[in-house]
Image (cartoon, rainbow, N blue to C red):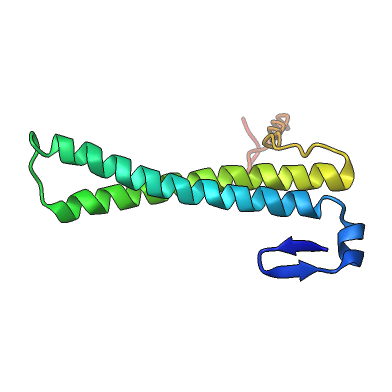
Length: 125
């Protein structure tokens, strides 16, 4: 039986999706990396700002706000990146193919050939 968080998954479903355990472990690792990034980022940025506060004095609430907001953005980015890797791993284990993450190619529309008429229906001289 596979555990996903506090939920246990049936053996039949786990047998149908053999990569489920690896995916759950990968997601757990991604969320822990994001949490660690937030905690370490907040502490690190707070310490750096405390050191800089001797030259640029500003109130403590701004120091905390900047540290928390910047760490939240970094944490979100790290978690999103790691979750994308987990999704790619899941797709690889389920289908045997690596997903293509490249942006789709956009083709340019062809220029219409001149027919002697303008787009308003007038005949060109």
